Image (cartoon, rainbow, N blue to C red; front, side):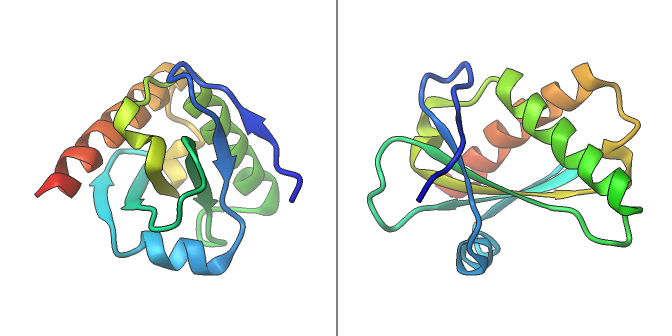
Length: 126
């Protein structure tokens, strides 16, 4: 399976989720509600190695195809710059985008991703 990997500041690779079953498993995990997205973070049962697997969901309600693609590109780039906690290396994350992800300043989007990963990680410990 050829997958594009990116190396964020965390030091471990980020791999894209593509299978519907992985998105559905993340639905039962911890959540973090941010301004531009809802983050679902779930523990991964199978051992794939040290990587964060990430999926993006942008529904048609958010906007046209051009706007939805721009939102996904913004989220992918913001994730590369965000501070990812080291404990997220065995998790699956799904970002459900809101319309505000299109107009939110990029620096704020990066901060929201860092905060969301930290907050959802803390929630999953409970």
